[in-house]
Length: 140
Image 1 (cartoon, rainbow, N blue to C red):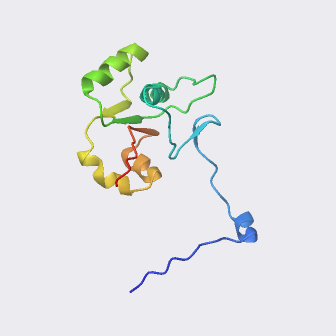
Image 2 (image 1 turned 90 degrees about the horizontal axis):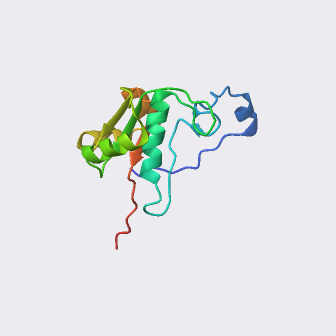
């Protein structure tokens, strides 16, 4: 049986009459729940920024003068060792809170990547999930 791929649309009248849930911001007006891509050249600090964001959200401290909704965070540092993450933590904070979590193991996470990010956050009870690194490779 051939599955038909149709373009799903919604008309303006229906869209205007639907009650929609507003975005839930982790960092006021800047970082909402959902998927965000942090891209840049190698060695410019993407991993450091993601680690800092995970710790800062877990602490509930303001980010760049904006309010933060404190929550539990998960940092998937899939190419780092625990020693490297510990050393970086010592560089950015004197006290890492208990509600910031880290893993360097992706084996047990394989099934989660097929779920929408909102489901992952709800399932694991995390407000912010930082997944690094994310590399695109061209296969010839």
